[in-house]
Length: 359
DNA sequence: GGGGTCCTGGCT
DNA sequence: AGCCAGGACCCC
Image (cartoon, rainbow, N blue to C red; front, side, top):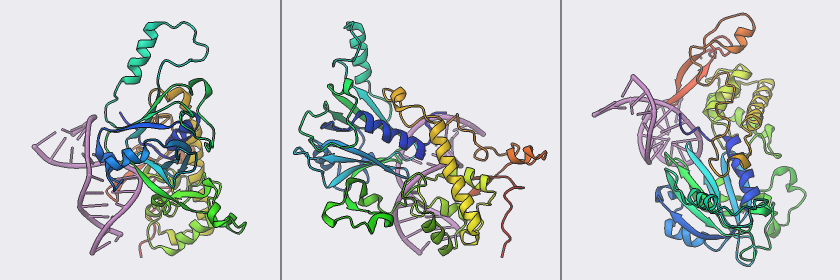
């Protein structure tokens, strides 16, 4: 099975990897291989190229499954727009270092290895859609670079940041940064003109709620939204403006853990049920981030965003016809069922997750 | 609450 | 040859 879906944990791994390896690097050139991946960049691919070229990667941020890179102008100031990346369901970001620099302790300048490294660097992966040619760290003045620069030993050579996407549900685009100061700190009066970079968000991402791993995640706000809707709980869990970072797989896992049926109206969840559900979501995401935690370092020359999927121990998703783990624990055999839901699949235990009483 | 659209390739 | 998955966003 090729191409696992990038979920929040994969996107976070990619974010951290770029933060470690690519910040501070100027964009020397942009190669648009397939303009469909820039569908959401309304000014068009040519504008995307020229707008990005000459700016440097500055900071790497994430909200839910959206990733964005802030940019430095040539004079080191923060650019007023950021590069937004969404991996969709088959996207990857691959980072490749240009060979030739002082590669750390490597002494033998074996020309065979050198040309192999060059070939690997030049190889064009299948489904490559956009390539960013990055220069060495600090090749132009990027005095304002924040958030950790690229690892020192590789920082002297160029690098390629490749956007690969088989199904083109993902994409890249530029979006203006707007302030989004969490309510919890808003009272500490952030000066209007001087909003810290971490409280800026691309306009296109502003409607996305903070995810459960975000330090400013607001469970009370989620609860309020639950109470205001008539939708079933799974639909609400998948609504990125209510709570972000939860896809079809983790929704089923969290609902299984919280013993809730996907069609139970969100507003009928008790406060305790809501708390348990949000705890389940948080746990699922956190465990997956830890388990899928193949480090960016191990992967970044090859494949990113493909970590750990098979390792994940799933209790619900994809387990139709298999015994419910919790029922088995209780000495009971209940077979998990698959049901169509919003043109896709829902998996649940018919015993633990009973249908809500119809009204 | 429902449905459609984007897209590819693996499956029947 | 046709179906279908999936995230985000669109419309009614």
